[in-house]
Image (cartoon, rainbow, N blue to C red; front, side, top):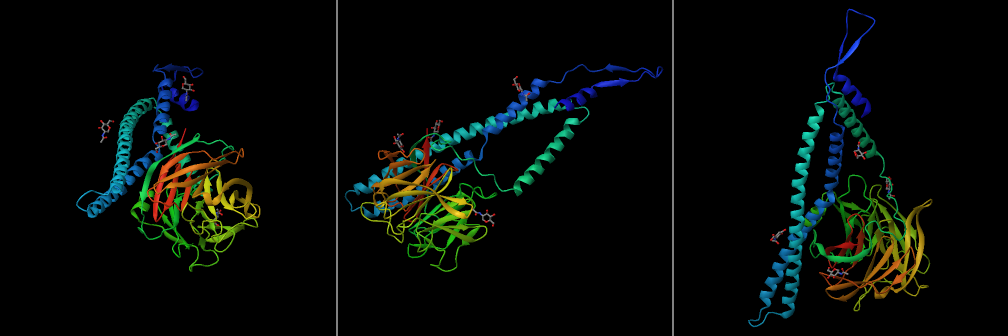
Length: 460
Ligand SMILES: *[C@@H]1O[C@H](CO)[C@@H](O)[C@H](O)[C@H]1NC(C)=O
Ligand SMILES: *[C@@H]1O[C@H](CO)[C@@H](O)[C@H](O)[C@H]1NC(C)=O
Ligand SMILES: *[C@@H]1O[C@H](CO)[C@@H](O)[C@H](O)[C@H]1NC(C)=O
Ligand SMILES: *[C@@H]1O[C@H](CO)[C@@H](O)[C@H](O)[C@H]1NC(C)=O
């Protein structure tokens, strides 16, 4: 700013050479208007505030709410027509009415949220537009001081420099996110889970009972909004491709633009996905390898698979499953999970008497490897599913066909176990076959009987 300023001020100075005396020259200041530093300072601050107000997360919030609503209304309609069909001329089924009442409550809540979010957005858009036009006026005024066009040229240079930087950045891999310190969470303390925020039967309604879906917490550049879907397409046990969607809305409306990335042409084969509890991280799919007590990693870019064996005694091939009171869920021996810090695997072993064991899955000097391991005292068959948030393992159990409870936690930082978490959330379908936390948007993504349902994690 300093040299620019000097030059600008110089422009306000008119040099008048006294021709008659060649040895001496005089300067005459023809303008005394000083450059308004504080005005520039205020403008800079305004621009900063304005930038902070606008974020892509805010746009997604609205989109998600709309989608939730859009998908719920037809469901309600279907339920009501079913209710009408079941009408025996006397009383409507009390239970069906209860379901519809619940649905209506959810819809009303969703609409209220939508209303407040929209009001907020509208206000923000208005404020931002005002701010921008004020800033523009201020800057135009300031530009009048730039008689030598120094600032203008400087701006051009800066723009070019920025483009160049961006160009460079685009070629470098994304810097690894800094790991949150153990036991602390960037969003605050995990407190609660919202009602369902996204609900969609996806592209193949009712087709694949088991599967998983979500959003890569550490996406490859240019794929930040992509969502992935892995249905168990064969015997409710195997999968051989990852289906990709460029946005959440395209997943909801069932338009897969990038399409499938095939792991193996036939099914099952060596690298087949076995079981539903898979996750995507940094452009790779992590899953239970077919017929092995091992974690496989399929790199979607290089299309290669690497794996790491689990400890001896690990139960696999449907011998160490998640269960509810009535049944166990086949091939849920290994549950992969993501959180702020990376990838984890939850499993059980014979020597740990069927209790949950948790290990980090990480990139080592020799490739994929297991990191630190923690041993819990919760019995795997008493658990429906698990997920990780900020280094804490959470386990759920089924309370009824429409309520699930997060009842247990294990903090890897302190080793502290709790059996009295008591967070309840509403299920739209009785059985959750996969559940995973997405640190990008703090959503809990579940796959339940061919449907995708998400919840927002509430931190305080
Ligand atoms: C703007 O003014 C504030 C307080 O007067 C000062 O702290 C800040 O450094 C100034 N910013 C610039 C960019 O000059
Ligand atoms: C939306 O919110 C405004 C106040 O912010 C309220 O006046 C209006 O009735 C609400 N509309 C609905 C449909 O809830
Ligand atoms: C958690 O959220 C549910 C609704 O989703 C609410 O009924 C409950 O009171 C909340 N619990 C806490 C501790 O905030
Ligand atoms: C996937 O493969 C690409 C290309 O070989 C490589 O750059 C990238 O680091 C790999 N990703 C993982 C997670 O191994």
